[in-house]
Amino acid sequence: MQTRREMLGKSAAVAAMLGSLGLLPTAAHAAYAQAAFDAKTMAELMKALGAGAPTESKDVTIQGPDIAENGAVVPVGCSTALPGVKRMLLLVEKNPSLMVAMFDVTDAIDASFNTRVKMGQSSNVFAVAMMADGKVLFAQKEVKVTLGGCGG
Image 1 (cartoon, rainbow, N blue to C red):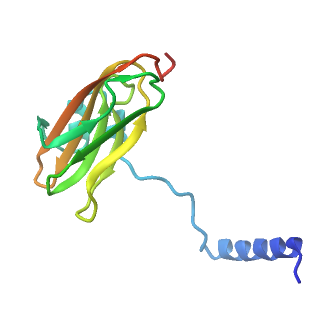
Image 2: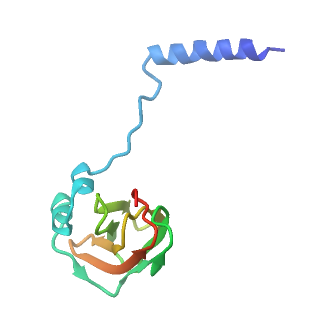
């Protein structure tokens, strides 16, 4: 029976061999559009993503509280039942970074997402649906924050 020390020694030898052959993965990084996350306005964001001007639509819905007691964890969600959605975005107008989430959508999944965002102050929150035909549709909701999450 092998001891734990012997097993770790053999594992290290195997890892070194795989590393020398270039078979170990390098650091993984999430792919995202840096310019999109750096955008400060809706127009800058749409330009960075190569999209046109957004139009308000009743087919896109946004869920969230009217009043968030703690801005550090505000539950929000976005959804649409429209066919041909390629990307969903969640935006917080008065945050340092306008875009707080971007979800790529395929035909295999429903365009319905929930997450928690950080909000430093009361602001409009937008759910944006980018369609395959180039249309950009959005819905908005005002969320009032009583205790700031971004240092407030």
